[in-house]
Image 1 (cartoon, rainbow, N blue to C red):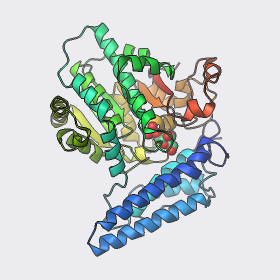
Image 2 (spheres, rainbow, N blue to C red):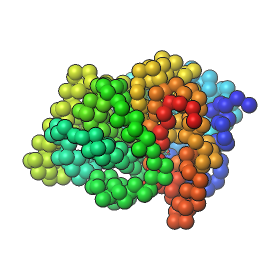
Image 3 (tube, rainbow, N blue to C red):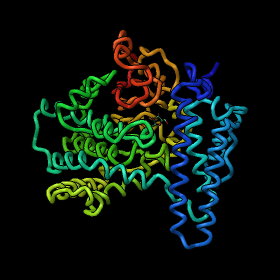
Image 4 (cartoon, helix red, strand yellow):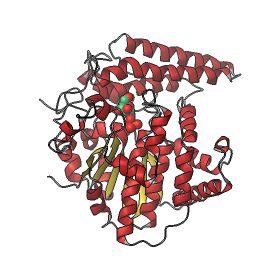
Length: 450
Ligand SMILES: O=P(O)(O)OC[C@H]1O[C@](O)(CO)[C@@H](O)[C@@H]1O
C-alpha cells in the first residue's frame, strides 16, 4: 500500500483512540484554543466603530463556534470554501482523495490538526476587513513579555560581539546554545493549557547548572554529531524552519547570531508560516514584532528592567536588524509549511523549496514538536527506529544535514537506543515523557544513508 496522509509508514495517531494524547487534544485542547480565539475576537470587534468590521467580526465568532461544534460532535470534515487562496484546491483534492468520509476524530490527527488551523483562517479570508488579523498575536506578545528574565539574561550575555574563541571554547558555547535553543521550544502556547508558568520559567532557565540538569531529559542527544558537522562549516548557509514566536524565536536568533559571528555561516534563512498557525508559530510579521519589542523600552517596562538590560537588548536587536538589512539573514515563508502533509511529501509538493534546501543549505534546523511530527510522519514507529528511516529517503539522502530540536509534546518518537525507553519509564509515564514537554530530543541526520 502506498504511503499517504491517511496511511503513514506505521499506524497513524488518531483522536478516535480514547484516552490518547490525540484524543485529549482534539476533545479538550482544541476547544480551549478556539474559545480563546472567540474571546480575542469579541474584544477586537468591540473596539471597532466601523459597521462592516463589527458585523464581520461577529460573523467570524459565529464561524469559530460552528467549527468548535463540528469538532466536539465529531462531524465529517468538509472541503474548504473558496476563500481566494491558491491552496484551497490542493486541500480539497487531498480531502477528497485521502479522507473522503473522515471525521475530526477518525482522520489522522496530524492532518486534522493542520486542517483545523486552515479552517480558522478561512473565516478571516472570507471577510473583507479582518484578512490580516492574527487572533493569537496578543497571546504571543503576553508570553514574550513573561519571559523577560531569560530574555535580559541572554541579552546581557550576547549583546557584545564575541571575542575570538578557540575551537574548544566554541564547542562548549555551541553545546550550551543548542540546549537554550532546544528548551526555548518548551515555550508553546498551544501547550500552555497543560503547563504552569512556573514549569515554563524553569524550562527556560539559561544557567549552566540548570542546563546540565535538564540535559538528562534529552532522551536522544545528537548534539555532538551536530557539532562535528558545524565545526567544519565555513561561510555556509544554514536554515531554520522556525516554530514559535517570542522567546523561542529570540533564542533561535541568538544561535543564528553565533553562527554568523563565528563565520560558520554567512547566510541564515528563516522559514516562517504563511498564516497564524498552532497558536504561537512564527509568521513573518512576528519577526518584525519581536525586533520592535526589543527596541521599544515600553514593551518590557512593567518588568522593571535595569538601564543596562534595556541597552543590552537594544544593542542585540540592532545587530540583528543589520543582518537583515545587509542580507545575511533572510526571512521567508512558504505555503508548504502550512499544509497538512508530512515532509516526505516536500519533494513532490514543493519541488523548488525541496531543491533549494537540498542543494543550497549545509544544515537545516527544524524547530519544535510539529516539525518533528511532520519529519517523522507522526506515526507509531517502534521507538528504536533510526531517525533516517523515519525521515525517509528524500530527506535523509538529499539534504546535506538535518537537525531536529524538539521538546516532546506528542507521542511520536524514534531514534532511542535499546533499553532507554524502559529506563525512562521507571520514573515517568509514557504520557509524561512523550507529550508533557519536559523531555526532549536532538536528532541529527548527516544526509547519508545509515
Ligand atoms: O510548537 P510546537 O513545539 O510545534 O508544538 C505544537 C503543539 O501542538 C501539538 O501539535 C498538539 O496540539 C503538539 O504536537 C504540540 O504540543
